[in-house]
Image 1 (cartoon, one colour):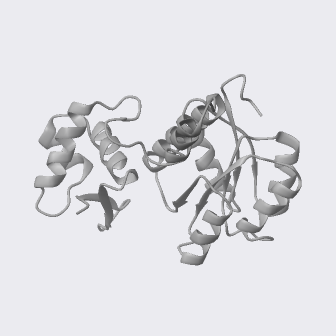
Image 2 (tube, helix red, strand yellow):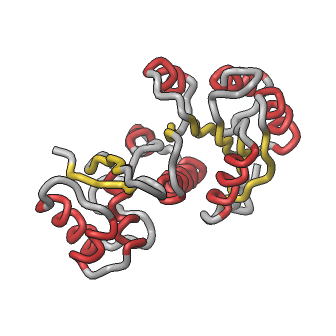
Length: 230
């Protein structure tokens, strides 16, 4: 574990070598995360956690030898208290419920982009830091920790780099849109960059204030479209 250094060590687990490489690149773009290893089977993941002692495991569920959720109790039996973030194509309700019962910190569906993973990692880092530094003097301290445990920030507590003023402009664009909007359309309407607009839109999606749909064209990647959640 790397609590004293502030770095969050990550193990990436995915049966697809290329996907694992992409996820590794995504993670290493977000401070203070550092990928310490990759694994491509359940057994490799268990061995890697034992050898590398990561703080966080990005865990695919469809592994060639074990179902991903079956890896978690084996880690706990071995005495490992690393957190687990599920990253998978598994959309079954049973898988989601099982992940919640196993205490995962997040559940992200494939396919996804860097902009999908980044706010989840940042949210995890913030909450992890809060948990590590909390001093419990009474019930209020316990309630404060549990109320925010691995949940999207509420109210005006925006992630670092986002401003309340711009968030209000993006929210108004969503509210006044006739249907859905893309990041490029929101950027043009507000007068900010497409990258910035997408980060705000993804924040609203992560906090449950916006829905995302995909529009498929004739070529290239599908376009992400955002709408205000009623």
